[in-house]
Length: 204
Image (cartoon, rainbow, N blue to C red; front, side):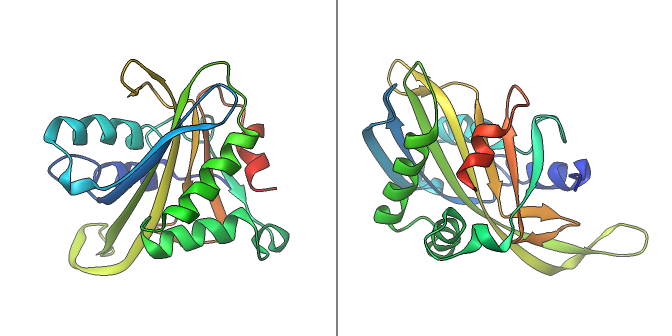
């Protein structure tokens, strides 16, 4: 399944300081071996304007990347949605809007066990919701909302200095956003080099 570039651009237009769709950000700082050095979890709206700008650049890099090259659709079969799966974990994190630190810790450890790195890195997780406006036959947006797309963006970034995040190396958008709607059977995997094997292994 191909990702529609227009769907991704529609999302990124809500990832600015003035039109922000995120309500919460959480994350962990990891060492080269995948062990946690520290964590954070905060209301996105309480960040300073400069911090919002920096973090929005991290989140936006995932959907704004080269569609169907750096960002690729990955289908999730029934076997990947069983109890105890990462799909179930992400659904729970989406439901609690990142307010459960125990669930987040499970995600960080899960990624840390599978992500290969020769440098310290950060795992940044964003929770957002987007009121998808109805579009008429002329494709002009109407005022009423058609659906609320509730989603997570996870970005894995190199960090330097005082945990300053570099550009994301890999990550994902969950659930997928297909035909301007929530697609619980898919996830959009991101890899800056276009090699999605490691991210796909998270959902095996």
